Length: 282
Image 1 (cartoon, rainbow, N blue to C red):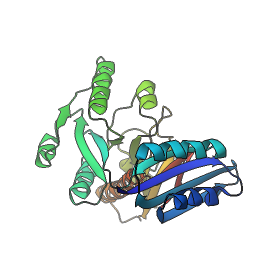
Image 2 (image 1 turned 120 degrees about the vertical axis):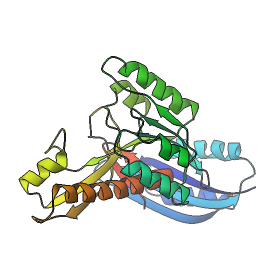
Image 3 (image 1 turned 60 degrees about the horizontal axis):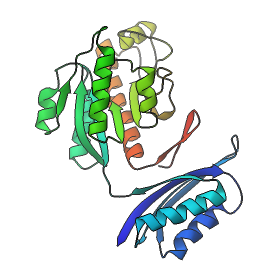
């Protein structure tokens, strides 16, 4: 059968890796449609993403052959069907700008997602979820039931076989245990004022200090709060004429765009983890 696949890999850098991978695909009659690579001189690691098409008689045989190549190169790799939609669960609290943006882009065919569920600790967006025909799970969180709620959240994520969890302005801190369970498949978005202006109303605090830049950061979720590997960032310039409402609106726009780009790249297997950093093959 004709198949378009995406191979992502990393391994210790050495001469001949590109030749070995491209030769491997050539021997099997595959055509490389897109390829990108990066040599990290600081860590001595080599990263690569290859999209290729060809007649694949057996994916199992291809996996076996790739495993043999990986042993030779010391390679960690993954193989993904290029047309497969990534099963996704969205989580949100009371601010819906990122949620609304992701749902619209998804329904418009701009994101390679299969959004399976929305999880929220508030009821504000159940009608929005219904309008997109996405199941909505209302799980209120208190100081006394957080462990039980997280257990239920994880049940939903696993039941939907979610490959990606997006914290689209979900304002509860995840436990270390849940962060570990979701390692490498959970993306968060926040304003880029950190470590300044922590806590409530960051745009009010920023306005009082007369900031000239506001921004947003999309990153992978880790147990270190808001310190996971960064996927995407952006900024918008502001000046003295902007009100708190202006800053907030501009910040929300920036957050939505940054999160959408991060989710898109992840769903297209363009993001490779490199320790505390990421390699992005745009």
